[in-house]
Length: 581
Image (tube, rainbow, N blue to C red; front, side, top):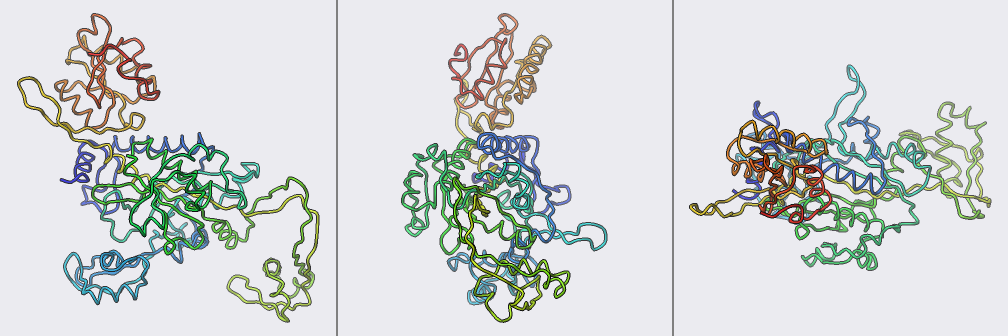
């Protein structure tokens, strides 16, 4: 078995991950998180909250997972959120057409459907499952469609990302933060994408968890007040230029900003924060890099975008976080569709004389001429330029209807006025985390199989150990009476209760030999095991075993919960915590 198979086998056996709908044969793209997996996932999410909500101050919101159609028209998902699909004419299996040709042509994901069909035909590519003939490629929208309400209802979609809820709530968020930039909102929740052929376990799911922050900043001030925190961090930066060479650069973040490799300080700070979070939860630094989107793949609305990628044994480099400067694209798009101004008032330090181009439609004439559409016509006129308004007949769009407005009912001029501030549309910095991919990567990087010394009369044996970071481990302490006898069980249960009261997740295990119990807890990544034996009855001390080193110390049972808390959360030195055995 390769590392992926070993990790998934352990995950299924020990209650981290299970195939969804297993008794019905399952279906691709869905996984259940078992008792340990759910706990591990929550710990990752809580550390993310600690990073972004507690320490950065970006409060969390919760928006519906179903959105009305207008939201996704504005976001571009209705018109452009699709993958090229082709189906086998023989067995009916569906495939990503670009994935079928990605080893034949470069940048296959940038080809259109006709170009993909041409490559498939010229290279005689057949169905990977049955070798049958493939049908023509077409664009398949990845959103799950639904109806809101009875009958035909209102068209809706399961959200493909959590971000849109934060954009729609922008005005409420601005008031909450007293209209002071920068401010941000976070959200952790389920998103849904009807993937064509999810064949990579938890790397590509149809229902997955995202953790996103939308940080609204002044478009004219993209410095970060705390950039010094990460400025001298050396990261593996796989820039556009480095990708042409094929090797990542190890570079300080402040150097990358100075050289223009990263667009600005605020984005570089978010890259540094992402690096800090991923290493905090146990991702190996030498298997982590930040890849810049190349010019031909950069979204048209983005100034700069970087992906945090983690190296895995089977799948290579896997994108787990996207960090982008999305400019004002999202707020402008929602403003246009909702016909609601999504801006914020920025007060100047001193009043300024400002020249503005002002359009004044004559509502007294527009009303009788356009009736219920007059207000929309007036708003369209106010958004037009001088050149457009100087035409004999002015054409405005109201919805999909073109309306002609006589130029004698519109006045326009430049006016110089004294202003105390202006309305600006903030730019958005977005770090977007794929929690499920991070979950798997954390497990793979924690997985280890090693030889350990046996007893004098036995050969060395192997053990599997999950070397989770202590604050990430799903079970933090195991309480183990040496034997299943009442005189040991009673104090063991008392110690277990005291540890629970401290807020640590503890398991009680009295089944099998003490060696087997140690191995079971090594396999699920429990950092510390506490053994209660007959010496405990004599001197009220217990044995604490360290998972990684397998070293043991003897410590007093009184205050054991406080001691374990310090070992797990306060980096207390293990050897100094008791008498080394």
